[in-house]
Length: 233
Ligand code: URA
Image (cartoon, rainbow, N blue to C red; front, top):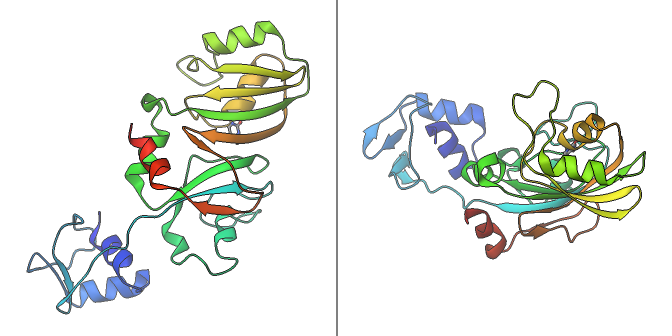
């Protein structure tokens, strides 16, 4: 990772203060003076600030039940970021270092995974890793066997070069289904149903890989070691 990020992750300095200490020639990496903020360091490098050895904080892994009218961005826009819910009781520090692995739309509710480990996120979001996501979908029109078959074969979405990967529908009732996807294209669920003449009226993510949503709307918890490692299969 970049030297400035490493220092931010191992001290309480803010971004500006990190730049100041780097430029003030206070940082040694493996006993060599480094003044380039973008210099690449590894977690096992010997990095010191005025002689004090720096160790990065351990990565954090959480799940949250995202409520509607929140966004999966680090900054508030028209709607507040779901990450604000981590700050309510001051339980979590350095929230700005966290990001959401696999976003949901503002009106979509359900499971989001939150971490500061970019490599872990990569495993979840890379389509070739086949990480499944299960959505509960309420529709404006009745689901048909033809749609079930077309989803399993792959749908041609506008502006996409390839068909969507096979997607599996379990019918709950005439206008409600559980949909399993292994990729995460922009607005994918809504675009797939729109492509077959139906419309999503409510969308809720229940599961990612082996991790199931088990907390109430707006609540979060840390993942267990088993859940964290399940994405390294
Ligand atoms: N697909 C969508 O269309 N929206 C979401 O929020 C997630 C998947």
